[in-house]
Length: 184
Image (tube, rainbow, N blue to C red):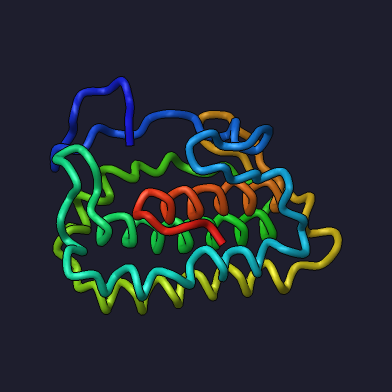
């Protein structure tokens, strides 16, 4: 988590980068190639990149930050859980509305407000599993015409249901790498 901004609450430098470029080219940090994920593979990939979290959350050092400006494993897991919830909600909005506009989500403010570092790792693992399954199930239930439906983020970035899935998958995969797990 790096940024040009000053450290915020909790000592974490807010990540205010626009990561939408990962839809067009591989991420040099984690190697994930979002554009290579076929529509038929989105649900399975969501499951694959979230399945390792219960084991990761069982680590004895789950609450320890590697340095003051980097989230702990627990904080990353809470973020991944919330990404799954948020993106599932956005897909549903895209399916139910014509080109909905998504409010900005301040992940760093959420981490502080929800006290990510103080949550119970077992409860986070369970919640992450439910959130990931729900998001994957949403993708499995899509019809052929659903993939092209659109939504627009408050900053102007426009997504289809497919590109939103790919974008979210990069986030999930990248955070596995952040906690030292190979991307499946």
